[in-house]
Image (cartoon, rainbow, N blue to C red; front, top):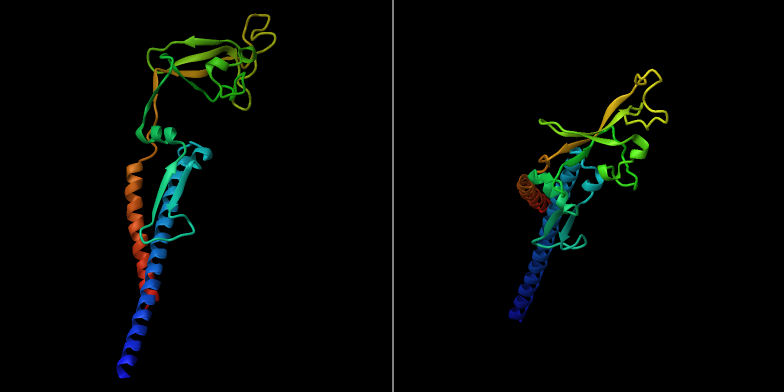
Length: 229
C-alpha cells in the first residue's frame, strides 16, 4: 500500500516538473522571437532613414522590407529574420559606388535644376524628349576640363528658377540688343561617366545588427530570470 502511494507521489512530481519545463521553454522561445523581431525592425528603419537622408526618396526607402521565420503569429527556439530591398539594383549601386556610363557609349546627360522636369512624352526629361519647340534648340558646348554642356541660347530664367519658354518675337529688340533677362541656359551636364557616391555600408549594418540581436536576447533572458525570482 505504501509502495503504491510512493509511486503516485513520484508520478505527480514528474508531471509538474515537465509542465514547468514546458512553460520555461515557451517563455524562452517567445523572448528569442521578440528579440529577433525587434532587431529586424530596428535595422529596417535604420536603412529606410539612411535612404531618405541620402536623397533617394521615400519610395526607394519603403522598398526595404523584412520577413520573420516563423511568421509573426508564431515563436520558436531558433527564430530568424531577414531585411531585404525590392530596389536591389539601386541599393547595390549606392553601396558599392558603381560607375555609370551611357548605354550608347557617348555622354551621360544629367539634367540641371534649370531644365524642365518632364519631356514631350511626359517622362523624366532627357535630351531625346526635350521640348525644343517650347524652350529652343539644344546646342552642344564641349569643354576639355569638367563636364560639357547642352544649352539653349538666348533664353531666360523664371521666378521659380527654371528656364523660361521661348519668346515669340525672339530674344532681341529692334536695335539688335538682347532683351532684359536673356541668357544662355545650361539644360544638361554631359559626363563620360558618373560614379555613384557610396551611401550604404551594408557590411557595417550587418555587424551592428548582430551586436543588437545579442544585446536584445540577453535583455530578454534577464527579464525572464527576474520574473521567476
